[in-house]
Amino acid sequence: MARRRKGEDEHENHERWLVSYADFITLLFAFFVVMYSLSSLNEGKYRIMSDSVVSAFRNITSNSESARIISSPIPSIRPQVAPTPSDATEAERKSRAERVKNMAEEIRKVLAPLVADGQVRVTEGAFGITVEINASVLFAPGEAQLGADAVRALRAVAEVVAGAEFPITVEGHTDITPIATAMFPSNWELSAVRASSVVRLFVEGGVKPSRLTAAGYGDQRPVADNLTPDGRARNRRVTILIESRVPEAEVSKPVKASGVTDSILPADAATPLPQAPAEGR
Image 1 (spheres, rainbow, N blue to C red):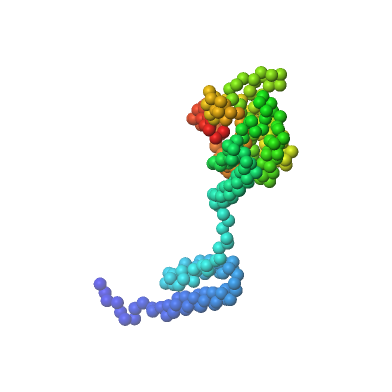
Image 2 (cartoon, rainbow, N blue to C red):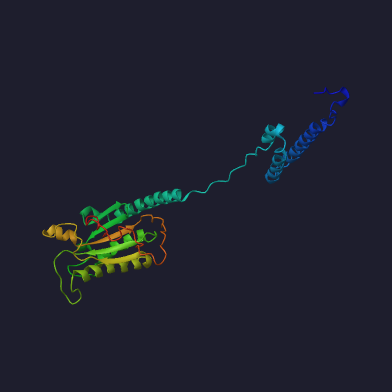
């Protein structure tokens, strides 16, 4: 191989300084842009500038660390987070529980003499307030017309519940002693008309009719033994249910398209619902 002569050496590149100079000018430009943007408190402009600088520095590998530092976002003030549905539901439950407790105490006060005699029972449960009134306090045997003392007592209860929004169900109950009159052919009619009499009195006392429901169960839901006089007296009653349970959120279920033979009902839809225990109704 022939040796290379001295005159044949490659020409030296005298323009390499332009690369460093270009990097310097780019950094200097970025520095002044950052200084200008920091003089303004407009976060939107800063983010636009930051994105532009990061995009420009991606082509300069030697200054990648500086680019990451400059592109760090300014901490922003987070807005107040609204309460989640679960938190709102829990707060509503606590509020309702407090109102139910106060309402139960007010009912006990207005019916204090009857509560002391054992003619009225006021209890609180998961579904609200249950006011059980012995029928002898309200009606004559075999009748559905409220007496004068009963009217005064029930009007006091109506004043307590009129300002609330809870649904109210009035239930009429009898013992197993049969009845067969022109007005009441059976205990079904007697219990239903007794419940309706209480509902009408509540409406006159200021309770909205849309909140009220009357139901007659005859002798089908006893709370005591019908074979004893005391048990039959206990079963002849009117029960006022003040429902205060917070309704659960509805969960929508997908419905299969037409032509699918499978039932859209859940597997346990045919299973009969268990009856509520007689005690407490």
